[in-house]
Image 1 (cartoon, one colour):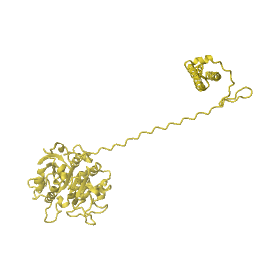
Image 2 (cartoon, one colour):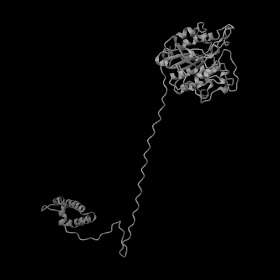
Image 3 (spheres, rainbow, N blue to C red):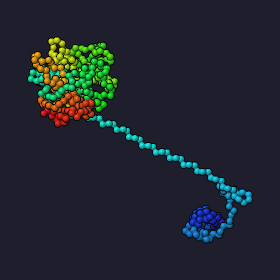
Image 4 (cartoon, rainbow, N blue to C red):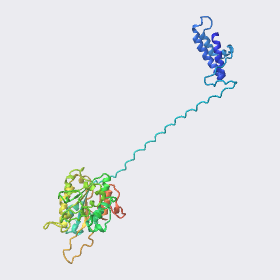
Length: 433
């Protein structure tokens, strides 16, 4: 143990000068224990062994400091970091330590990704999901629905199956202003009342929307079926036929007229291709009616000038006026009523889009008191048959009612507070008085 006393005392003294007595005792204990383990091979079997001595020191570290003599002072050797002495006895100024490198800036936390914008909720249709609207020329209310009706199929066969709107009236006698109002809510203008002699000036700007635009945006389908619509150059059936800008439209007796096709008067449909896709010849109707999936949610039917009921437009010797329109209904309406879409959730509207009453048969007879009062018929499996509705309706009402049925917002004048809608009849299941 004498071999270790000198180094042990030095270690204790050095530790005491650095960190105090407590740290010196801990260092002494560690050195004693380590020395005892190393000196196992040097000790014999007599007396206290090194391990035992080490254990005793660990139990009482103060004994080591009492028994061990104080070490002789040793010249301190300069540490590598201490400055060398300067001649004359003064120490050289300490070398300044380099400034600590700045801590790297923490990377900014990534901003949370914005959630994807929620898709707008689409309108939903009510009980009625397929609407068929037929537009004709009226011979007058009494000539259509009176006791001496010129339209026996309409008044005697179809009307008992549905609801008669006894106070349905037009906005003007001409076809175009009523058609435009029915599909857009735009009011009649001087140009539309005059049947738009300059077609290009009558086309509404692209900002003016129609029922067809609304249906497309809401992911409903629409189609207009125009009888006799053909390409002027080829004579073959064609889509969305309308006058060319600056051209004079040659009237075709009894045939197709763009005045009965309101969809060709809107840039919103012409410029974006909807008219070219969905404004089709009437020959497409029978094919589309075969399945619910191929039947449009909204179908607009306009016969040619003869079948629409305009007087003087049919070949000589054939039914004319109201009789021609009634013959057209007797042919096309049974096809609609037999279709799967109509039977499931359909509504048929037979409305007059123009007034063309026959002149009085007797010179002394007075013309109808109100030629704009024309009446209309609704037919649907969801309505009570053989009913009447005496509320005031007009072309704006047709638009408003159709929009209400499909959950759409009313356009133009259809939003008026006085515009009646018959859509609520389907929530109660009764449109009659």
